[in-house]
Length: 493
Image (cartoon, rainbow, N blue to C red; front, side, top):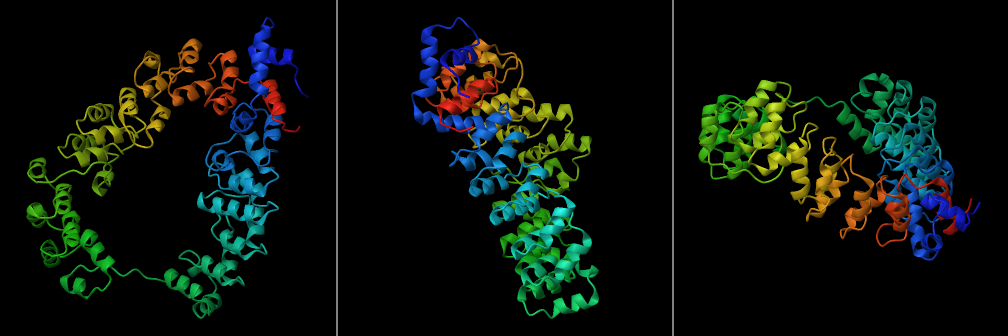
Protein backbone atom coordinates (compact mmCIF):
# COMPACT_ATOMS: atom_id res chain seq x y z
CA UNK A 1 0.00 0.00 0.00
CA UNK A 2 1.36 3.45 -0.92
CA UNK A 3 0.79 6.49 1.27
CA UNK A 4 -0.52 9.81 0.00
CA UNK A 5 0.89 13.24 0.78
CA UNK A 6 -1.50 13.98 3.65
CA UNK A 7 -0.84 10.62 5.27
CA UNK A 8 2.91 11.08 4.90
CA UNK A 9 2.77 14.49 6.57
CA UNK A 10 0.77 13.04 9.45
CA UNK A 11 3.29 10.24 9.89
CA UNK A 12 6.40 12.35 9.46
CA UNK A 13 5.51 15.39 11.52
CA UNK A 14 2.99 14.01 13.93
CA UNK A 15 0.62 16.97 13.58
CA UNK A 16 -2.42 17.54 11.44
CA UNK A 17 -1.73 21.27 11.10
CA UNK A 18 1.39 20.90 8.93
CA UNK A 19 1.64 23.50 6.20
CA UNK A 20 1.56 22.84 2.49
CA UNK A 21 5.27 23.71 2.44
CA UNK A 22 5.85 20.95 4.98
CA UNK A 23 4.02 18.49 2.75
CA UNK A 24 5.98 19.52 -0.31
CA UNK A 25 9.31 19.35 1.48
CA UNK A 26 8.58 15.88 2.89
CA UNK A 27 7.54 14.58 -0.51
CA UNK A 28 10.60 16.14 -2.16
CA UNK A 29 12.93 14.50 0.30
CA UNK A 30 11.32 11.13 -0.24
CA UNK A 31 10.90 11.25 -3.98
CA UNK A 32 13.17 13.63 -5.82
CA UNK A 33 16.64 12.16 -5.42
CA UNK A 34 16.91 8.51 -6.44
CA UNK A 35 20.56 8.44 -5.26
CA UNK A 36 19.17 8.43 -1.71
CA UNK A 37 17.36 5.13 -2.11
CA UNK A 38 20.36 2.87 -1.50
CA UNK A 39 21.12 4.79 1.69
CA UNK A 40 17.57 4.37 2.92
CA UNK A 41 17.59 0.65 2.18
CA UNK A 42 20.93 0.16 3.98
CA UNK A 43 19.77 2.21 6.97
CA UNK A 44 16.46 0.38 7.26
CA UNK A 45 18.30 -2.96 7.12
CA UNK A 46 20.11 -1.99 10.32
CA UNK A 47 17.19 -0.25 12.02
CA UNK A 48 16.65 -2.06 15.32
CA UNK A 49 12.97 -1.05 15.37
CA UNK A 50 12.14 -2.03 11.80
CA UNK A 51 9.20 -4.45 11.86
CA UNK A 52 9.40 -7.77 10.08
CA UNK A 53 7.26 -6.48 7.22
CA UNK A 54 9.78 -3.73 6.47
CA UNK A 55 12.74 -6.09 6.78
CA UNK A 56 11.17 -8.64 4.46
CA UNK A 57 10.88 -5.94 1.82
CA UNK A 58 14.42 -4.62 2.42
CA UNK A 59 15.98 -8.04 2.02
CA UNK A 60 14.30 -8.68 -1.30
CA UNK A 61 16.40 -5.88 -2.83
CA UNK A 62 18.88 -7.39 -5.25
CA UNK A 63 21.64 -6.34 -5.30
CA UNK A 64 21.56 -5.41 -1.63
CA UNK A 65 23.57 -2.19 -1.08
CA UNK A 66 26.79 -2.65 0.93
CA UNK A 67 25.86 -6.21 1.83
CA UNK A 68 29.25 -7.04 3.34
CA UNK A 69 29.28 -3.94 5.53
CA UNK A 70 25.73 -4.60 6.67
CA UNK A 71 25.79 -8.33 7.30
CA UNK A 72 29.26 -9.69 7.98
CA UNK A 73 30.21 -8.09 11.29
CA UNK A 74 27.27 -6.34 12.97
CA UNK A 75 24.83 -7.66 15.52
CA UNK A 76 21.53 -7.95 13.69
CA UNK A 77 17.98 -7.95 14.99
CA UNK A 78 16.24 -11.34 14.86
CA UNK A 79 13.99 -10.02 12.10
CA UNK A 80 16.96 -8.86 10.04
CA UNK A 81 18.63 -12.26 10.41
CA UNK A 82 15.50 -14.09 9.27
CA UNK A 83 14.99 -11.76 6.33
CA UNK A 84 18.63 -11.83 5.23
CA UNK A 85 18.73 -15.63 5.43
CA UNK A 86 15.90 -15.68 2.91
CA UNK A 87 17.57 -13.27 0.46
CA UNK A 88 17.39 -14.58 -3.12
CA UNK A 89 21.09 -14.00 -3.82
CA UNK A 90 23.27 -16.79 -2.34
CA UNK A 91 26.17 -14.32 -2.19
CA UNK A 92 24.23 -12.30 0.39
CA UNK A 93 23.51 -15.45 2.39
CA UNK A 94 27.20 -16.39 2.25
CA UNK A 95 28.13 -13.02 3.74
CA UNK A 96 25.51 -13.46 6.46
CA UNK A 97 26.93 -16.89 7.27
CA UNK A 98 30.30 -15.26 8.14
CA UNK A 99 28.72 -13.17 10.91
CA UNK A 100 30.17 -14.19 14.31
CA UNK A 101 27.11 -12.83 16.15
CA UNK A 102 24.54 -15.11 14.54
CA UNK A 103 22.50 -17.22 16.98
CA UNK A 104 22.83 -21.01 16.67
CA UNK A 105 19.36 -21.35 15.13
CA UNK A 106 20.29 -18.99 12.29
CA UNK A 107 23.57 -20.78 11.62
CA UNK A 108 21.68 -24.07 11.59
CA UNK A 109 19.35 -22.74 8.87
CA UNK A 110 22.29 -21.54 6.79
CA UNK A 111 24.14 -24.83 7.30
CA UNK A 112 21.33 -26.49 5.37
CA UNK A 113 21.08 -23.83 2.67
CA UNK A 114 20.47 -24.86 -0.93
CA UNK A 115 23.80 -23.30 -1.93
CA UNK A 116 26.78 -25.54 -0.96
CA UNK A 117 29.06 -22.55 -0.37
CA UNK A 118 26.57 -21.03 2.07
CA UNK A 119 26.48 -24.36 3.92
CA UNK A 120 30.27 -24.60 4.10
CA UNK A 121 30.70 -21.04 5.36
CA UNK A 122 28.02 -21.54 8.02
CA UNK A 123 29.76 -24.68 9.28
CA UNK A 124 33.14 -22.92 9.20
CA UNK A 125 31.67 -20.13 11.34
CA UNK A 126 30.18 -22.64 13.77
CA UNK A 127 33.58 -24.32 14.11
CA UNK A 128 35.56 -21.10 14.50
CA UNK A 129 33.27 -19.64 17.17
CA UNK A 130 32.41 -22.98 18.81
CA UNK A 131 28.71 -22.61 18.16
CA UNK A 132 26.81 -25.78 19.08
CA UNK A 133 24.49 -26.75 16.26
CA UNK A 134 21.57 -29.15 16.83
CA UNK A 135 22.79 -32.72 17.37
CA UNK A 136 20.82 -34.15 14.47
CA UNK A 137 22.32 -31.50 12.16
CA UNK A 138 25.90 -32.30 13.20
CA UNK A 139 25.23 -35.94 12.39
CA UNK A 140 23.93 -35.04 8.94
CA UNK A 141 26.92 -32.81 8.28
CA UNK A 142 29.34 -35.54 9.34
CA UNK A 143 27.85 -37.82 6.70
CA UNK A 144 27.37 -35.18 4.01
CA UNK A 145 28.27 -36.29 0.46
CA UNK A 146 30.58 -33.26 0.22
CA UNK A 147 33.96 -34.27 1.68
CA UNK A 148 34.73 -30.62 2.46
CA UNK A 149 31.63 -30.49 4.63
CA UNK A 150 32.64 -33.64 6.48
CA UNK A 151 36.11 -32.12 6.97
CA UNK A 152 34.59 -29.08 8.68
CA UNK A 153 32.23 -31.29 10.64
CA UNK A 154 35.22 -32.84 12.43
CA UNK A 155 35.64 -29.54 14.28
CA UNK A 156 32.01 -28.98 15.30
CA UNK A 157 31.19 -28.52 18.96
CA UNK A 158 28.85 -31.24 20.20
CA UNK A 159 29.75 -33.81 17.56
CA UNK A 160 28.94 -37.19 19.19
CA UNK A 161 32.02 -39.17 20.18
CA UNK A 162 31.08 -42.19 18.08
CA UNK A 163 30.61 -40.05 14.97
CA UNK A 164 33.88 -38.20 15.56
CA UNK A 165 35.76 -41.50 15.85
CA UNK A 166 34.02 -42.96 12.79
CA UNK A 167 35.40 -40.10 10.67
CA UNK A 168 38.89 -41.54 11.18
CA UNK A 169 37.78 -44.19 8.67
CA UNK A 170 36.34 -41.72 6.17
CA UNK A 171 37.01 -42.39 2.46
CA UNK A 172 38.59 -38.96 2.08
CA UNK A 173 42.17 -38.73 3.45
CA UNK A 174 41.82 -35.08 4.51
CA UNK A 175 38.78 -35.98 6.61
CA UNK A 176 40.66 -38.90 8.16
CA UNK A 177 43.58 -36.62 8.96
CA UNK A 178 41.35 -33.94 10.50
CA UNK A 179 39.67 -36.51 12.76
CA UNK A 180 42.92 -37.82 14.23
CA UNK A 181 44.18 -35.87 17.21
CA UNK A 182 45.31 -36.18 20.80
CA UNK A 183 41.71 -36.80 21.96
CA UNK A 184 40.72 -39.36 19.34
CA UNK A 185 43.97 -41.29 18.93
CA UNK A 186 43.91 -43.32 22.17
CA UNK A 187 40.17 -43.98 21.70
CA UNK A 188 40.43 -45.47 18.21
CA UNK A 189 40.24 -49.23 17.83
CA UNK A 190 43.70 -50.86 17.47
CA UNK A 191 43.02 -51.87 13.87
CA UNK A 192 42.04 -48.28 12.96
CA UNK A 193 45.24 -46.94 14.54
CA UNK A 194 47.28 -49.52 12.64
CA UNK A 195 45.61 -48.54 9.36
CA UNK A 196 46.23 -44.86 10.06
CA UNK A 197 49.92 -45.49 10.80
CA UNK A 198 50.23 -47.26 7.45
CA UNK A 199 47.97 -44.86 5.55
CA UNK A 200 49.30 -44.08 2.06
CA UNK A 201 48.31 -40.41 2.42
CA UNK A 202 51.00 -38.19 4.01
CA UNK A 203 48.39 -35.93 5.66
CA UNK A 204 47.07 -38.87 7.67
CA UNK A 205 50.53 -40.03 8.69
CA UNK A 206 51.45 -36.49 9.83
CA UNK A 207 48.25 -36.34 11.89
CA UNK A 208 49.18 -39.65 13.51
CA UNK A 209 52.68 -38.38 14.29
CA UNK A 210 51.25 -35.27 15.97
CA UNK A 211 48.60 -37.19 17.87
CA UNK A 212 51.00 -39.85 19.17
CA UNK A 213 53.79 -37.40 19.90
CA UNK A 214 55.31 -37.58 23.38
CA UNK A 215 56.67 -34.23 24.49
CA UNK A 216 60.44 -34.23 24.97
CA UNK A 217 61.55 -32.11 27.95
CA UNK A 218 63.52 -28.99 27.13
CA UNK A 219 67.26 -29.22 27.78
CA UNK A 220 68.35 -28.14 31.25
CA UNK A 221 72.11 -28.76 31.04
CA UNK A 222 74.86 -27.33 28.85
CA UNK A 223 75.39 -30.73 27.26
CA UNK A 224 71.70 -31.09 26.44
CA UNK A 225 71.49 -27.52 25.17
CA UNK A 226 74.46 -27.93 22.82
CA UNK A 227 73.12 -31.20 21.45
CA UNK A 228 69.69 -29.67 20.73
CA UNK A 229 69.38 -28.93 17.01
CA UNK A 230 65.99 -27.20 17.06
CA UNK A 231 66.63 -23.46 17.45
CA UNK A 232 63.09 -22.87 18.69
CA UNK A 233 63.56 -25.39 21.51
CA UNK A 234 66.88 -23.78 22.41
CA UNK A 235 65.15 -20.39 22.76
CA UNK A 236 62.31 -21.95 24.75
CA UNK A 237 64.84 -23.52 27.09
CA UNK A 238 66.51 -20.15 27.65
CA UNK A 239 63.15 -18.55 28.52
CA UNK A 240 61.39 -21.22 30.55
CA UNK A 241 63.37 -24.40 31.30
CA UNK A 242 64.49 -25.23 34.86
CA UNK A 243 68.12 -24.76 33.80
CA UNK A 244 70.92 -25.91 36.07
CA UNK A 245 73.61 -23.52 37.35
CA UNK A 246 76.07 -24.29 34.56
CA UNK A 247 73.53 -23.72 31.77
CA UNK A 248 72.32 -20.51 33.44
CA UNK A 249 75.91 -19.19 33.51
CA UNK A 250 76.38 -20.28 29.89
CA UNK A 251 73.22 -18.45 28.73
CA UNK A 252 73.89 -15.10 30.41
CA UNK A 253 77.23 -14.85 28.60
CA UNK A 254 76.08 -16.21 25.25
CA UNK A 255 76.87 -14.15 22.15
CA UNK A 256 73.29 -14.50 20.92
CA UNK A 257 71.33 -11.63 22.50
CA UNK A 258 68.02 -13.52 22.13
CA UNK A 259 69.38 -16.23 24.44
CA UNK A 260 70.63 -13.64 26.93
CA UNK A 261 67.17 -12.06 26.73
CA UNK A 262 65.66 -15.45 27.54
CA UNK A 263 67.99 -15.94 30.49
CA UNK A 264 67.13 -12.49 31.83
CA UNK A 265 63.46 -13.44 31.63
CA UNK A 266 63.78 -16.99 33.02
CA UNK A 267 62.83 -17.13 36.72
CA UNK A 268 64.94 -20.31 37.04
CA UNK A 269 68.11 -18.29 36.38
CA UNK A 270 69.39 -17.13 39.78
CA UNK A 271 68.85 -13.47 40.47
CA UNK A 272 72.54 -12.81 41.05
CA UNK A 273 73.35 -14.14 37.57
CA UNK A 274 70.48 -12.22 35.97
CA UNK A 275 71.73 -8.98 37.53
CA UNK A 276 74.98 -9.34 35.59
CA UNK A 277 72.89 -8.52 32.52
CA UNK A 278 71.92 -5.07 33.80
CA UNK A 279 74.84 -3.63 31.81
CA UNK A 280 74.11 -5.68 28.68
CA UNK A 281 74.59 -3.72 25.44
CA UNK A 282 71.21 -4.90 24.13
CA UNK A 283 68.29 -2.72 25.40
CA UNK A 284 65.78 -5.58 25.24
CA UNK A 285 67.96 -7.66 27.58
CA UNK A 286 68.17 -4.84 30.14
CA UNK A 287 64.40 -4.36 29.91
CA UNK A 288 63.83 -8.09 30.48
CA UNK A 289 65.97 -8.03 33.62
CA UNK A 290 64.07 -5.01 34.92
CA UNK A 291 60.80 -6.95 34.73
CA UNK A 292 61.87 -9.90 36.89
CA UNK A 293 59.63 -10.60 39.89
CA UNK A 294 62.53 -11.16 42.30
CA UNK A 295 63.97 -7.62 42.09
CA UNK A 296 63.45 -4.95 44.69
CA UNK A 297 62.20 -1.59 43.51
CA UNK A 298 65.64 -0.15 44.24
CA UNK A 299 67.30 -2.79 42.04
CA UNK A 300 64.73 -2.22 39.31
CA UNK A 301 65.24 1.53 39.32
CA UNK A 302 69.03 1.14 39.10
CA UNK A 303 68.81 -0.56 35.68
CA UNK A 304 69.27 1.56 32.56
CA UNK A 305 66.21 0.38 30.64
CA UNK A 306 63.83 2.21 28.33
CA UNK A 307 60.10 1.56 28.07
CA UNK A 308 58.78 1.26 24.51
CA UNK A 309 55.55 3.06 23.71
CA UNK A 310 52.33 1.10 23.48
CA UNK A 311 51.18 -2.25 24.79
CA UNK A 312 53.73 -4.75 26.09
CA UNK A 313 53.07 -8.41 27.01
CA UNK A 314 51.84 -8.87 30.57
CA UNK A 315 54.58 -10.67 32.52
CA UNK A 316 53.38 -14.12 33.59
CA UNK A 317 54.14 -13.43 37.25
CA UNK A 318 51.97 -10.31 37.19
CA UNK A 319 49.08 -12.19 35.58
CA UNK A 320 49.37 -14.86 38.30
CA UNK A 321 48.72 -12.13 40.90
CA UNK A 322 45.58 -10.71 39.27
CA UNK A 323 43.43 -12.19 42.03
CA UNK A 324 45.57 -10.77 44.86
CA UNK A 325 44.46 -7.21 45.56
CA UNK A 326 47.39 -6.42 47.83
CA UNK A 327 49.85 -7.63 45.19
CA UNK A 328 48.09 -5.47 42.61
CA UNK A 329 48.45 -2.45 44.88
CA UNK A 330 52.15 -3.14 45.24
CA UNK A 331 52.74 -3.55 41.50
CA UNK A 332 50.63 -0.48 40.68
CA UNK A 333 53.01 1.52 42.89
CA UNK A 334 56.10 0.28 41.00
CA UNK A 335 58.37 2.76 39.29
CA UNK A 336 58.28 0.52 36.22
CA UNK A 337 55.71 1.69 33.66
CA UNK A 338 55.45 -1.73 31.98
CA UNK A 339 54.41 -3.32 35.27
CA UNK A 340 51.86 -0.59 35.92
CA UNK A 341 50.50 -1.05 32.39
CA UNK A 342 50.20 -4.78 33.09
CA UNK A 343 48.10 -4.16 36.22
CA UNK A 344 45.48 -2.34 34.12
CA UNK A 345 44.59 -5.69 32.53
CA UNK A 346 43.49 -7.24 35.82
CA UNK A 347 39.75 -7.77 36.31
CA UNK A 348 38.04 -6.39 39.43
CA UNK A 349 40.71 -3.86 40.30
CA UNK A 350 40.42 -2.30 43.77
CA UNK A 351 38.96 1.22 43.65
CA UNK A 352 42.14 2.78 45.07
CA UNK A 353 44.25 1.07 42.37
CA UNK A 354 41.93 2.36 39.65
CA UNK A 355 42.22 5.87 41.08
CA UNK A 356 46.00 5.65 41.21
CA UNK A 357 46.38 4.30 37.67
CA UNK A 358 43.95 6.88 36.28
CA UNK A 359 46.32 9.60 37.50
CA UNK A 360 49.48 7.85 36.28
CA UNK A 361 52.04 9.99 34.48
CA UNK A 362 52.52 7.28 31.82
CA UNK A 363 50.12 7.90 28.93
CA UNK A 364 49.82 4.21 28.07
CA UNK A 365 48.97 3.24 31.64
CA UNK A 366 45.99 5.59 31.46
CA UNK A 367 45.09 4.48 27.94
CA UNK A 368 45.22 0.76 28.78
CA UNK A 369 43.14 1.36 31.89
CA UNK A 370 40.37 2.55 29.56
CA UNK A 371 40.00 -1.06 28.39
CA UNK A 372 39.25 -2.20 31.93
CA UNK A 373 35.56 -2.40 32.81
CA UNK A 374 36.28 -0.33 35.93
CA UNK A 375 37.83 2.59 34.02
CA UNK A 376 36.54 5.88 35.46
CA UNK A 377 34.29 8.13 33.41
CA UNK A 378 36.58 11.16 33.55
CA UNK A 379 39.54 9.20 32.16
CA UNK A 380 37.45 7.74 29.36
CA UNK A 381 36.35 11.21 28.31
CA UNK A 382 39.92 12.50 28.48
CA UNK A 383 41.24 9.74 26.24
CA UNK A 384 38.22 9.92 23.96
CA UNK A 385 39.03 13.56 23.28
CA UNK A 386 42.79 13.10 22.92
CA UNK A 387 43.82 9.66 21.70
CA UNK A 388 44.47 9.24 17.98
CA UNK A 389 44.36 5.45 17.82
CA UNK A 390 42.11 3.73 15.30
CA UNK A 391 39.62 2.51 17.91
CA UNK A 392 39.20 5.77 19.85
CA UNK A 393 35.49 5.81 19.02
CA UNK A 394 34.94 2.54 20.91
CA UNK A 395 35.63 4.36 24.19
CA UNK A 396 32.23 6.06 23.92
CA UNK A 397 30.57 2.64 24.23
CA UNK A 398 32.35 1.71 27.47
CA UNK A 399 29.80 1.11 30.21
CA UNK A 400 31.17 4.04 32.26
CA UNK A 401 31.24 6.56 29.42
CA UNK A 402 27.59 7.70 29.14
CA UNK A 403 26.75 9.95 32.07
CA UNK A 404 24.66 13.00 32.92
CA UNK A 405 26.75 16.12 32.41
CA UNK A 406 28.25 15.29 29.01
CA UNK A 407 25.81 17.73 27.43
CA UNK A 408 28.09 20.52 28.64
CA UNK A 409 30.37 19.71 25.70
CA UNK A 410 27.75 20.54 23.06
CA UNK A 411 29.55 23.79 22.13
CA UNK A 412 33.10 22.50 22.65
CA UNK A 413 35.62 23.26 19.86
CA UNK A 414 36.66 19.58 19.88
CA UNK A 415 34.19 17.78 17.61
CA UNK A 416 34.73 14.54 19.52
CA UNK A 417 33.41 16.14 22.68
CA UNK A 418 30.42 17.56 20.81
CA UNK A 419 29.78 13.98 19.70
CA UNK A 420 30.17 12.86 23.33
CA UNK A 421 27.48 15.34 24.41
CA UNK A 422 24.85 13.04 22.91
CA UNK A 423 25.90 10.22 25.26
CA UNK A 424 24.38 12.24 28.08
CA UNK A 425 21.19 10.32 28.97
CA UNK A 426 19.61 13.61 30.06
CA UNK A 427 20.41 15.55 26.90
CA UNK A 428 17.31 17.34 25.62
CA UNK A 429 15.87 16.96 22.10
CA UNK A 430 16.75 20.57 21.25
CA UNK A 431 20.45 19.81 21.95
CA UNK A 432 20.35 16.79 19.63
CA UNK A 433 18.54 18.87 17.01
CA UNK A 434 21.22 21.58 17.26
CA UNK A 435 24.01 19.03 16.84
CA UNK A 436 22.29 17.60 13.78
CA UNK A 437 23.44 20.81 12.03
CA UNK A 438 27.07 20.41 13.21
CA UNK A 439 29.98 21.03 10.86
CA UNK A 440 31.49 17.60 11.66
CA UNK A 441 30.08 14.65 9.70
CA UNK A 442 30.49 12.31 12.67
CA UNK A 443 28.42 14.55 14.93
CA UNK A 444 25.64 15.02 12.37
CA UNK A 445 25.44 11.29 11.64
CA UNK A 446 25.26 10.43 15.31
CA UNK A 447 22.53 12.99 15.86
CA UNK A 448 20.62 11.45 12.96
CA UNK A 449 20.55 8.09 14.80
CA UNK A 450 19.55 9.56 18.17
CA UNK A 451 15.96 8.64 19.14
CA UNK A 452 15.58 12.02 20.89
CA UNK A 453 15.91 13.88 17.59
CA UNK A 454 12.61 15.64 16.77
CA UNK A 455 10.82 13.77 14.02
CA UNK A 456 10.48 16.78 11.75
CA UNK A 457 14.27 17.21 11.73
CA UNK A 458 14.78 13.45 11.32
CA UNK A 459 12.71 13.49 8.15
CA UNK A 460 14.83 16.37 6.87
CA UNK A 461 17.99 14.34 7.44
CA UNK A 462 16.65 11.59 5.18
CA UNK A 463 17.62 13.86 2.32
CA UNK A 464 20.52 15.84 3.80
CA UNK A 465 24.14 15.45 2.78
CA UNK A 466 25.86 12.59 4.62
CA UNK A 467 22.96 11.59 6.88
CA UNK A 468 20.29 9.63 4.91
CA UNK A 469 21.59 6.21 5.95
CA UNK A 470 21.95 7.18 9.60
CA UNK A 471 18.49 8.78 9.63
CA UNK A 472 16.95 5.68 8.05
CA UNK A 473 18.44 3.67 10.91
CA UNK A 474 16.83 5.83 13.60
CA UNK A 475 14.49 3.61 15.67
CA UNK A 476 11.88 6.37 16.04
CA UNK A 477 11.02 6.35 12.34
CA UNK A 478 7.36 5.30 12.17
CA UNK A 479 6.80 1.98 10.43
CA UNK A 480 4.39 3.63 8.00
CA UNK A 481 7.11 6.06 6.95
CA UNK A 482 9.55 3.18 6.50
CA UNK A 483 7.11 1.55 4.11
CA UNK A 484 6.59 4.87 2.32
CA UNK A 485 10.36 5.17 1.81
CA UNK A 486 10.47 1.68 0.31
CA UNK A 487 7.52 2.51 -1.91
CA UNK A 488 9.31 5.58 -3.24
CA UNK A 489 12.49 3.53 -3.73
CA UNK A 490 10.53 1.05 -5.83
CA UNK A 491 10.90 -1.88 -3.45
CA UNK A 492 8.16 -4.45 -3.90
CA UNK A 493 5.86 -5.82 -1.22
